[in-house]
Length: 226
Image (tube, rainbow, N blue to C red; front, side, top):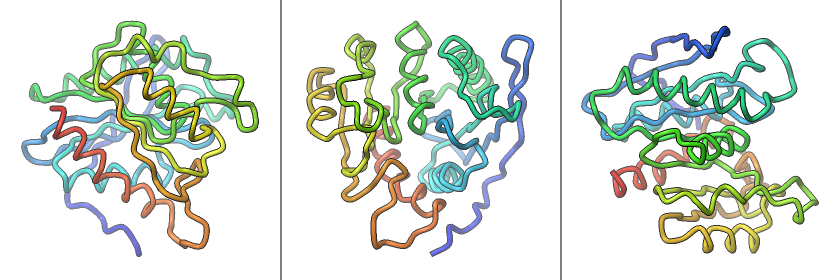
């Protein structure tokens, strides 16, 4: 199944991050219930069909979005930015999204690396109504002892963890334990059979369709916590 083009207009934007600039795509349906800034993962930029499919499906649920590139991706580099640069980018993007909003709740979301950097930015004081993780990278594959969770326990805003049950970046029992220790503000939504890209073995879906399939639970969470 192909994800249909949305009638909502997508507007290219440029966001200044210090002395560099990053690209973004902003779209705003009529009277949105929230604005969701969306970051890419370590291995692909904002143009990846997974992210475009995800954001376009959100328009129909009344969510405005701003997806964007980190500086390393904008410059054509493969190795992700260090946390200080990624966090600075998140701050600049959230400011840009706020300037375009009409006072609706402003959320931060990200695929893997992008979501983790959003949570670190919030832990360092970046304002956000809540966080959405599209596959949280709790630990490197095969290294469950190297958890990336310390900063999560001080976060009290609503958080939604969307995770595939076959995701090698998050052993299920470990992630369930982390979410439980974070507290009642954290919700874990399992995607049965999904890997780190939410692909399910034997289910032939394109990346855009997979991304679009995550929009409904995200919009529901935003609506419930708006």
